[in-house]
Length: 447
Image (cartoon, rainbow, N blue to C red; front, side):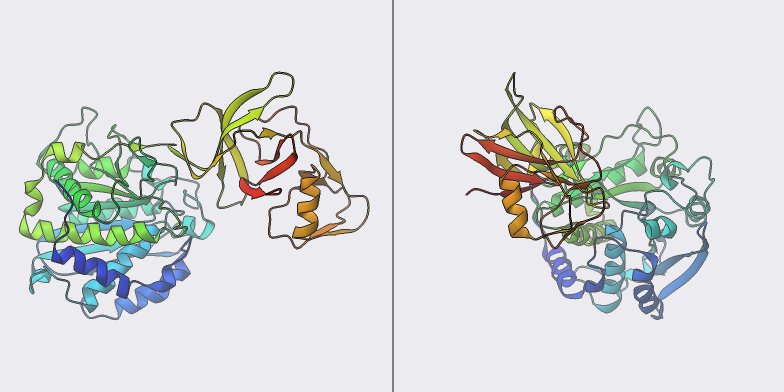
């Protein structure tokens, strides 16, 4: 079905633009970031706040409930501590539901539905910026052993609430594409299997129908940027185990979008998707979608993107050859890595550079022998002379460069470039050095 948002969906999108929590527009969220928000929400007489327990390091884990109807929805976020996008989104959605009258919702909707939200299930991992909790455990692989207090809390909530629909909200790495396209998968869905044979019971059918409707709706806002995960059964994962309880379980993964470092597009799409689900559950309109509509969503293709792709670069001295080079940048460390070299025609870059006529220059260190200060102008001059990094054994180099600078305490032993190495190298032609790749960032030196 073609995406055509009705008035209610257009309204929620516009309301998000006006009402989302702007203080949560960050690359990462920790417990202290959301504390003022949840305190504001908890002050509402319509919100029921329940302390569920504490993380391994003693941080509170709280459930917020809105409504008192028989249809039970449960959403949890940031069970992987470094996946914060949906945490902002669920707090936005509660704020919108409390402080506006979204189009399409019946006036008595709170007598029909109870929405339970557990934001930041893994506050210890959030504090560290890690996927795992303070024990080093991946909570989403703890559904059977229940060795983590966070996993036990989620398990208890599923038993206690017996949700009709469960929303398992995550972030995925930025390199997924929607099918074979070059488009980042800004949102990816899955109705997880509850058995290795991937049976589809009534609850899983409803999950797939809801996902098909959500994808159709979101396609209006982010066309061709929606993917569908493979549904191989995962014995230890919470989503698969919760699906086995009879809950219509929906995984939503927030991904990248162009020029959107804080994933605000995915944040907004989470709100739109949750609102579509609420509306369609109240009206049963999700039933118009079929399994075929679900499977029509393109595969969520892993490693279809890289941060920078250089095409048709010449490498090798005695035996020159042309190859593509893909480079990724670690957001946590700020360091780059060459991820692949060769025929990369199926991989697309957020930044694509056609390097025809350019070849990789041999690496050459600038050895610092006395106190030295580097600014962008001096740095560019040295790069153009063929120096790609600095050897500073005594800490004599200081710099105020805006461009990345590589400083080592000893010369690099490098015969040729290989995957896994940092992306600091120079590109030249017969007229000399033309460009530098500095921590994966393209810098023109000789226009």
